[in-house]
Structures are given as structure tokens and as C-alpha cells.
Amino acid sequence: MQELHSSAIPGDFFTAASLGTLAGATGAVYIICSTIQKVFNFNPKWLALLVSVLISFSAAFLTQTNENDISRYFIALLNGFLIYASATGTNQVFGSKPDNNTRAAGFRQAVKSNRRFNTTWWSY
Image (cartoon, rainbow, N blue to C red; front, side):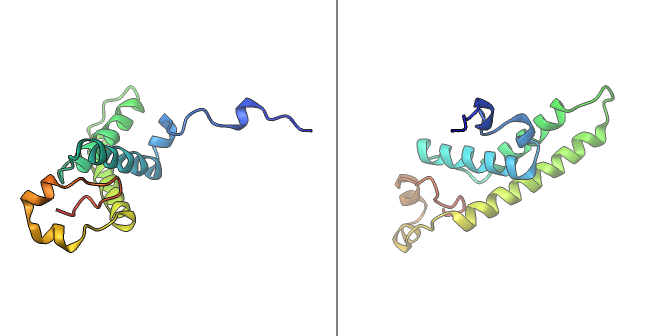
């Protein structure tokens, strides 16, 4: 019988290296924003953009070389927008739409309703 080595199973789901990829950063934004939405019933439209830009700037800061190149941070801002677009697209594809009664009730009803983990971020 072959033994499984502890190195065969990764200890971390997100790593610094995985957050440096578009897929990893997009996944992190999706998980963070959906969790905040579910737990706190809070998800303004700007939240995913803020998280995306923070992740992108963090990656740029952590991988910085000795030179302080301003273009690195401009590219980080553009990457933050790309992460945001990817995360919101993922949310629109996999997120559930609210029923028509919730939409018709207007903003006050939408604020009172409980949002699920996969409720689309742009529902209300």
C-alpha cells in the first residue's frame, strides 16, 4: 500500500502566489464579497471594486523590487479593475436572481430582505 505524504495535500487554499493570478484574485473577491453579503446583509456596489483594488495593490506592494516605479501602481489599478470585472461577471453567472416580488417592492423591501451567499450583487 502506498503512503500518502503530507505534502500531497496543500495546507492553504489561497496563497500569496495564487492571489497573484487573475483566477485566484477573482475567487478571493467573490468569496469575500459574497460572505460579507450573507453574514452582514451588506453589499454596496462599490465593495467588490474596493476589495479588488486592495488585493491588486497588495500584490504590487508585496512583489515590489528596490525601484519605486509609479507605473507598477498604475498597472495595479488597471489589474484591480480587471479583477473587479471578472468577479462581478462570475457573480452574474453563478448568482441567483431575486424574485419579482422583491424587485417590485422597491429599495426599502430589498434592504429588509435577507440576501443569500449567491444573490447577485446588482440585484437591488
